[in-house]
Length: 281
Image 1 (tube, helix red, strand yellow):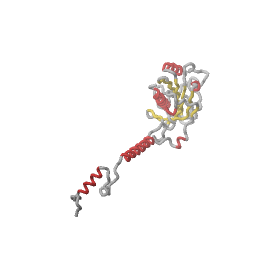
Image 2 (cartoon, rainbow, N blue to C red):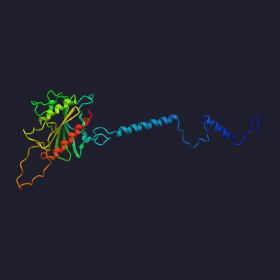
Image 3 (tube, one colour):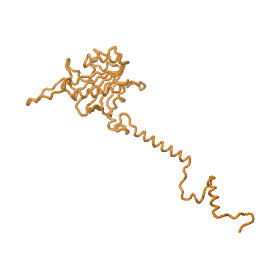
């Protein structure tokens, strides 16, 4: 029964009206039942921010830092407590060409060159280059314009060898070349430092060490590298043989090694490692 003026609805007309209401922004009390919430602009922005924070956190955690014991996880507690001794004032952080030991040889990182492995020990650094000399009364670096130095002690991981690497900084390449020539003319002028940063005993006068020191010019830097047996004795000295049968003749070594091939290997490897950072400087 209808009242005059009212129109009789056709089947399905009510559902069409509700669909039109939804298009206009209304809610469908029947159709929305059981459906998930729609992704609005605000929810989308929230998800984007959350994903960005998670990604940034992952990058920070996994980004390797110099000196990491395990890359990305930082130095171990045990090794951090054993950071090698450093003597002298560090270079200013604003100097891009400074000899910074933590950048060149991080304490917890093994130096490996051609199969030879060594770990950093004590460090000496400063601006007075005369401090690297065995005898300051005879100064081949005088008037060379040497600006700063860094000396690092190393211990071989697979060989009982100690090495001492000294890096010297000069204002230009020509000055560095002249200083290198002066140091080559006086072998043993640069002191050999031990793991505790003390200076080792000088080589006997006129003795030729088994591991010949290497003096290299790399850009406006000079590197001086030498090695000794693990007991820190001068490489050219020998110990008295124990009583007993005559030992067999030693196996000949390559010419120029002085009978100490491990020392030559260590010196070559660490001289190369010390010069690499300065190739393009």
